[in-house]
Image 1: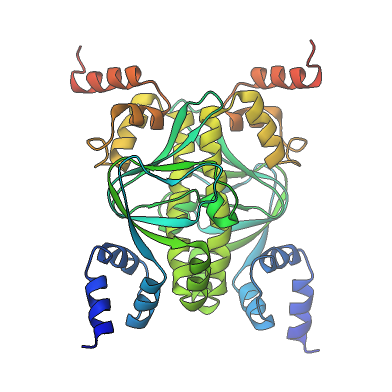
Image 2: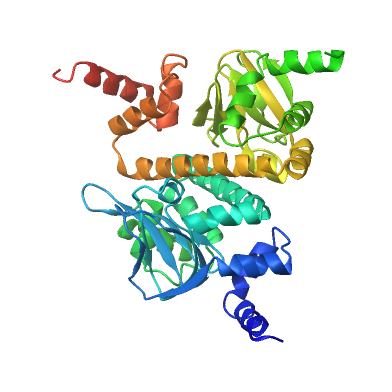
Length: 208
Length: 208
């Protein structure tokens, strides 16, 4: 093994393995393509509370979560925070509108826990699409799924009572409830913390 | 010109030209690729009121609108209709969740006017992705835009008053307001017809 091969081996079997495994679920890359892909991404650690995207600044990276938990949120004119999504291991998070147009972001993305992310910047991703067209397929498939989930959420917000939306949240994000404070879940559901607390106690003791 | 060339020429310069022009905005296809693509799609006319997708049945086609206007909607347990989106010329419409998984649809897609659509069925689209990988790119780009719009709608529904959501609707669908009945716009906005009518009269005569 050359030094370079040893480096690549160590890198591919480190934390970034989760990222490669995730991509392998959708497309089959050659050894060479995997090495090129890894040469175009970087991993970065963030502390709880740090911002990965800030509104008013261009979202430079698509972010894949290796570990930790993040939230994407919008701040309204009254300064109130509205959580659009959470992301944990194996999820992607960014302000996609800002990223694809390279214009200032409307959203904020902030770490709810210490995080490690794989980051791909805009220009590198455009190059990756050209060199590894299979990545067009990969991103086409995962964005379709994200779109279907977003449409479902629009329908649910119109049609389901808050209790059912809470149950759906627990189904969609099974591991998050224990990891984030209740007020964030309430913000995601568009209800008050007090109302969420009432829903939860009714689900635990439905006869009360 | 052979008969076949004449046929292709006539087809490409008929109504389907709108479809080719739309694709050409995003990717450049060779003459051969365009001919192959056209061999895998069909155009179909629908009358006002006809269903293109019905809930409970598998959504067989991705649909591109050559002419006319359609709505995608969800019917809740009380039988009430909730409009998720409209589509006019140059828009795509389907129950994407049903289409990509080939499982029964939750949504309905119905013609609000007489329509002409370009339809691509699931198996043909999978073949098109393999033969013309540029179409992966094309669909990746348009679905990203649709996802960004869906996320924006979730945020707006949480944060904007109904009047502002109505103004945003007029911006997003500038040509639709004159084409669909008011109760459909109210359904899209998640408000009553009466409330929409109040908003509109306040916008026309703000001092009243």
